[in-house]
Image (cartoon, rainbow, N blue to C red; front, side, top):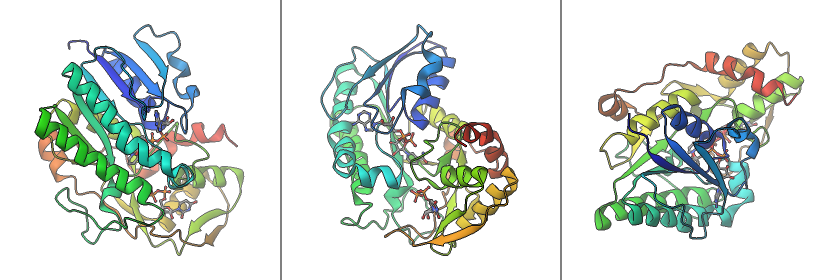
Length: 311
Ligand code: NAD
Ligand code: UDP
């Protein structure tokens, strides 16, 4: 396959660092950009001797020019509810000015472009499972709005650069993804439960644990995203694992995988926490020939050593 020069924003984050690994494994030259607001250079430490990888510490909210690139993966944004409510204005700006800045780079160099969007665009969904044609049910002024509305603006910006300027764009709507390098302290459910279980601390369920999520292992997600990057689809595509779990069931899976005797405790449910979330992946199946392979228990097992390092 022909080697490309690829820009990856959010490269020091959980998904961005796995994406860089996959792009390098395909033989590409990768320029990683990150301002390290939630990511860590430790996620890229193993690439320090790799001549095809370079890193630029840069806030994408400010215009920048990485030189000619053939493709851009725009993954920069705080992603966990804890991070994006702590960094509310920064999240709004990276999902607006930041996205537009990277689209301008794609336009300047005639580069392909893939934007990391989210199931949060569906909000607290009234349609279940969530199909790409559903417009969503989002609170535009609630605490999650800094993330949800920025991501929705980003999707509109990506489509506008495609429609008005002919930029060759793609949008992936990512559903909850987990695996090694998930930030240990960013409050997401899998990292919280794994670390709590391994430390023998109580697992903190928010609300009664009946809310659902559908968890995708990181290697499945990256495979789907690379397939999408090679496709000609410009409208959003869901990538996620359609196996749906209540948060209580998820806690029990974590206890089983870790062999932990931790108790389960209940804490208040955050405002606007979506009641259910499950991707309809028929579009990804037919368009990309993609579906996830790794079940939750196996993926948690593959993540065990990573989380043990924090305990
Ligand atoms: P993460 O926090 O680990 O990574 C995000 C990275 O973006 C971090 O390294 C952070 O420092 C960087 N960043 C944030 N603002 C920036 C800015 N202004 N300039 C440069 N870099 C900046 O989160 P993640 O889980 O890897 O998420 C990556 C992308 O995927 C995000 O866009 C997120 O919205 C999206 N996503 C992730 C999930 C998931 O389950 N992990 C689900 C849906 C969408
Ligand atoms: N959650 C929980 N306990 C935790 C962390 C999260 O019960 O310690 C719940 C949270 O309320 C939500 C689900 O787990 O219903 C997923 O939360 P996460 O922050 O991982 O991502 P979200 O899908 O809400 O963006």
